[in-house]
Length: 112
Image (tube, rainbow, N blue to C red):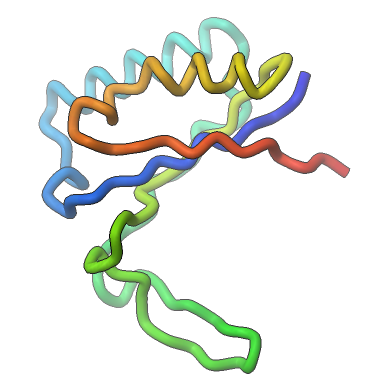
């Protein structure tokens, strides 16, 4: 089995605070992954508010952000284990984030 990070991206800051119904949909989706024994890490939500992020550049320059003025912002992630990336993509397709215009990036985790 391989591990894949599912990285959640949103375009609109108003979508960051889901309704109780949206939260329940997300929890049901996570529960279904856990029931299949494919949830490695339930991940975390990443705050998109001023003061909650910094960017460090190669020359040791530190800037605030990124902020939601950018095209998309990362709102969180989870890690799943599957046979291959196609199976991880199928899991991602079931997430309700698509109903609010979000996207999910699926990336294989390098295990040493």
